Length: 634
Ligand code: RUQ
Ligand code: CUA
Ligand code: CA
Image (cartoon, rainbow, N blue to C red; front, side, top):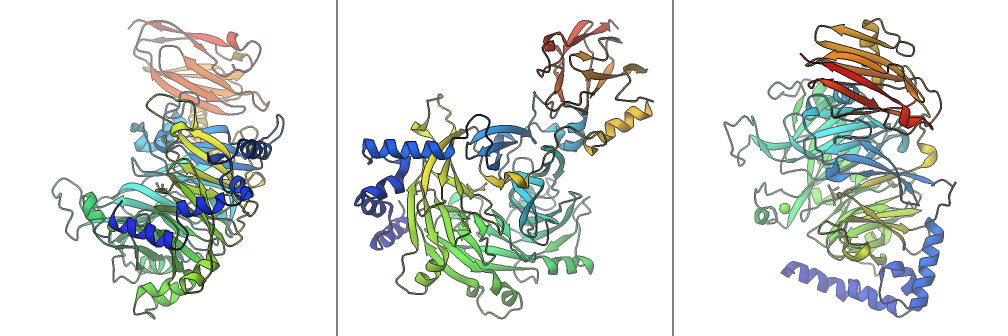
């Protein structure tokens, strides 16, 4: 423990707020032991534990035939996908491949997915952190989900009606998109995306110096409909997490490296880093006036948002701050201190004055610095005035009241910490149901713990992470479920099930495969009826339908070395009758759901006979759904 950490622990203990203090206090009342620690503690009696377990089971059990109340969208971390979960069952419902290659659906293999991945299709990895659902008037509208790729500096969009990724944008002139949030009001016009790392400009190998003015990172704003980068804002320091307000005017981001250091010690040198606030209308006005530059070949307007600019304000906060969360009442941006045992509450209604230079000191917008415990990382809300903050070092989640915290900060003797609950272990993100909207409903809380250790059957040196579900509907938080997860999911989001409206089968005019339909039409093909092989030099295009349990073409012949494109239209109309297409020994696999058209291109590089078959179970005669490609030697 550092001196400062020791000191902060002493401070907390003197107030009876330390972890030890809490366990001590709750141990005094038997009822509190069950409530406060639920399934998490070894100090419970056997009877109390059994009772808590029974209660937990009854809360999360979704019986066969019943449906979950919430959709959860989990980032798949460095696995590169998004996972769809049911809450409270915590059952995985679906996976949506995004930045990864997926063998089952053919994502990254099919022509449709490669078109969406664009130039970045050459990358086979991604690192998702922050999934967020588009909003209208501060409420989820269920249209899109956006997610960042820290590994290859991309932002992706998923259409929630079909639960497929439909756009991927590589952000130019920056490295590593990390924090990502959406404009909430009046609707999600913009996606706000923080590029984390400082790089030299131009980054062409002529200059590796990071100390000068031509080294910086940028705040990136993407048009949510077109998915083009609308503008980029140069900042001082680096950028970690971000969130937006409920007026549509401001976005804020944490910076942990105000020191602009390249080493660990250097990044921790300052006692305070900052939150940078972006004034979106001022930025739009500057672009309108032509007050911007461009970088390299990119056409994206780049604006100067460094300290002193009219477009931004820098508010000092302690120390290497991480999470940045807007309270659902629209009043506060809350920055979690990480290396400080505090979270800093910034009053959003003071930002107009800050931008109009009414304050001498930007710290005038700090309405409270709230001591919570060690390693605060992220805060989420129940819509009843409480925040829930993860304490990474303490391995706890702390529930605290925002109004009471402000009163305590102003010297009143009020207890603002309502409860501390042990989680397992080292929690990062936490997310309460509907928390990013004005409809935060305070029902469920997910804590995404970074370690699982003894919580599950051992799986060798690599352990799963642990997503814990906590019931926050009552006065006390109750841990009700442990959910193992692969490849650090980082973050998740939950929406009411009525807020997500999905299609049962594809529309034939869906833009997802419109390009494929267009090129088939150029070949004179009616995709829902024709079964035909078209030869075009060494390119062979095979068009076929699928209708359980048969492909429309059961054999075709090509020459060794031909580039073969197989385009399949599933003319089944029945919900859930998905077919697949696998060409044996060619690395070819794809999904074709009802009324979908999918296509895949490969080289027939070996002479011989090759079977192809349907890979998604579709019929009693699914095994018989197959055909042959004959490859004649060159
Ligand atoms: S960050 S553990 Cu990538 Cu969201 Cu905070
Ligand atoms: Cu078609 Cu299985
Ligand atoms: Ca720092």
